[in-house]
Amino acid sequence: MKVVAETLGVSRSNLHARMSGSAKPRRRYHKAQDAALLPMIGALVAARPTYGYHRITALLNRRLRADGAAPANHKRVHRIMQAHGLLLARTHAERPERVQDGKVVAIRSNLRWCSDGFEFTCWNREIIRGAFIIGAHDREIISWRAVAGAGISGSDVRDMMLETVEARFGG
Image 1 (cartoon, rainbow, N blue to C red):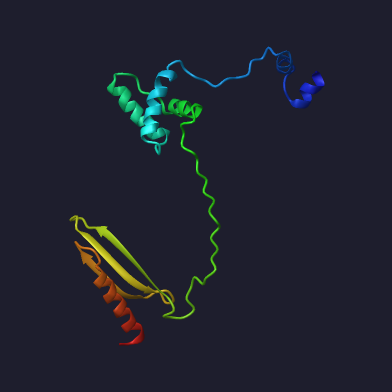
Image 2: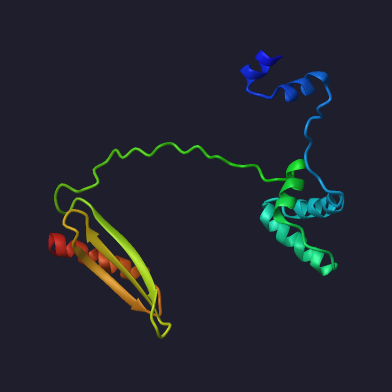
């Protein structure tokens, strides 16, 4: 038995206890009060099947406090939900690796234009919104609009496109 214990890297007493059947296998930890929490957790999960254990814990503790009971720890709720198959399925979406098969930089002017928009709030709480068109080759802002207190309209975008075409190709 000594050679087997050394080979396996365990103590002889551990190996002997396992061979004789006197060592009991470890079981999952549980508290007696878990049985009282299970129906409440099950009802919450049934009502809100997309909630994870943190949100279920918050709802459970809200209900427990309203009843005058002590709140439950989120680790305990996780253990109960895991033991009864109530946890959300972990999703591991396989994303295909993105291959860059195009040119990032335009090799000459007017092959590609880009546009973007932004907004920010001033100190007086007025909202400023802006949009612009930029040339991908020379990084020049060709046309832009800024509006205070309103959004960039479709006519503003059409006007910017018209200005861009006129500025680059004449009009």
